[in-house]
Length: 279
Image (cartoon, rainbow, N blue to C red; front, side):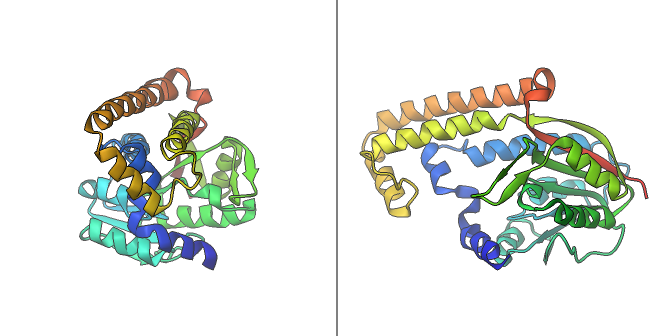
């Protein structure tokens, strides 16, 4: 736990501007992080539009508060909990008036039944085994008021990654855990197709290796800066490169936004699950 906290603390200041992402879209606004974030926001907006009341919004493992900032205008109060102090420091700068609490989502420091909407995005995969997941889900349900909504977004391709110590739960497993905690699944649908972005990132990494003369450490700060300086000496190349990258990102966005939720819903392993608290 402490090692993971230190890991998140160390990347908090640059979390939204990852060095690889910045290099992928050098000089551009359409970073990969922003692209993924917009897909999540769009999926959650549909949920917010169905709420009976918009008083309190809670985001578990809120990080730098991007979702809270996005939906602050829709709620009377937004609340974020994260176990990284540095992440919360960044969040408090971005979301003026938000309430940020240092804590663990397995023991959320909030009263029972206070939130109209609780969300948890791409976090449950870091919780294993499943009895630990159950403890966290019970806390999410506990802080949500009766009749309130819990929305989660997760990659649901079943496997366990020993190297990254994460488990991708199946939809049935997630629905079963939430039902044990007193909530009912209202609906689930595809958000995006992660393999599209993984392919994009793999292409970019290989391109960086070619540009950087085959050197492998293309993520170091010095190397990124050196690459930036070299590219700035070729403005025409940068312009063409930006156009190509935006076209590629646009293609990914079209496939994810149009095909994933509708035609290819069953192939979109990253899904949003919407639960309603009944007890």
